[in-house]
Picture 1 (cartoon, rainbow, N blue to C red):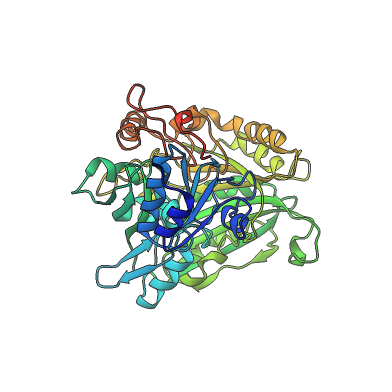
Picture 2 (cartoon, rainbow, N blue to C red):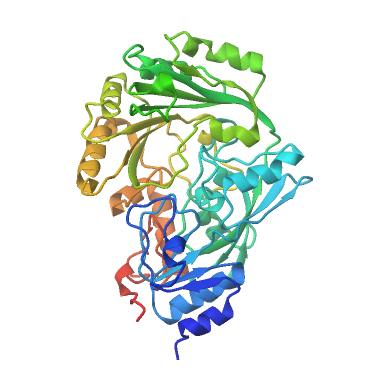
Length: 466
């Protein structure tokens, strides 16, 4: 006999919510407000045992199950069982080993603050509010990426509940295939409850942004592209472009302007950093300069991204190079002439990102030199317009494209796009592992890798909870 919701609630230390209950909406809605989950049951897990109970319940009811911590990358809403891990936010640092044990719902801010007293830092991303585990499962390109590689390259152990409701500790020695897939293959193989990661001996960086008015410095993108050709691996940088609204809450120099922001994160002396950055400072009038030496606890100020939940979509391509002829299209996409608001992003890759890790993983396209991204807020009725706009913006880069990055894909991807995130042989290996570990297709990952044909069931074979 299937377990009832009341019986499930009696088994977990956390909370269980159903539609209409107080707290249901607050638990199901995350940072991404577009198309939130509408589950039949939410298990707000307080620990790994709660996760296991939720997976058992979903399996018994043949119901799909999804996982959400902060909900930044939501792309695949579920109507079945939602496991909310935001309460599982513990972090334990071992300064002698330079590692941290990170629970499923911990944000990078949690990890940064726990590591800082020991002079250590994680390979966190541009926004400290993002979930550390979900970020790492997708690969993870952070502020120190060109020096240390992908976050997924520095995982030592993963604890998870597989779709058969088994709690497992996975390492390179215990299950090399699953360990390979979990690091870069996304949330396709189980519900991760925690992971052990390396920390870096970093307590300060030189970082921040240089802001330019694109009308005054129209060549800023190509100048940054040429500058990246000679910088050392200690320099990780990016550039974003958008048109700022003319609002009094914004810094006066940016109001109503078409702005390019070059973001800098450098591991080295302030003197070396200033010398490296000088060619950028000399491009033209600087609207705002926030570059400085700063403690890693303030690393979120480098990109200074908005921290208010909103509805948005984005697409990206990983490219071998940036063709100068394609850059004017990016400038236009972030200008007032665009059909909808566009935030253009370019990230410089290479360096340690291009090297194979000590223990192989599923991260794809290490030979990419840059990531090209376009993100837009989505107002009601704009979803189709935004999708077409993003497709058109990225089209000029198709000739240099290797595929896409799962981490920078904020929205649903079709099967071919998901396949493109991996080397062909790695994708086939992932489909075999998906069939092995999730034969009944319970998991609803944001970017689902399908089970190998004939090895598993179609996603539609789960049933709604009644």
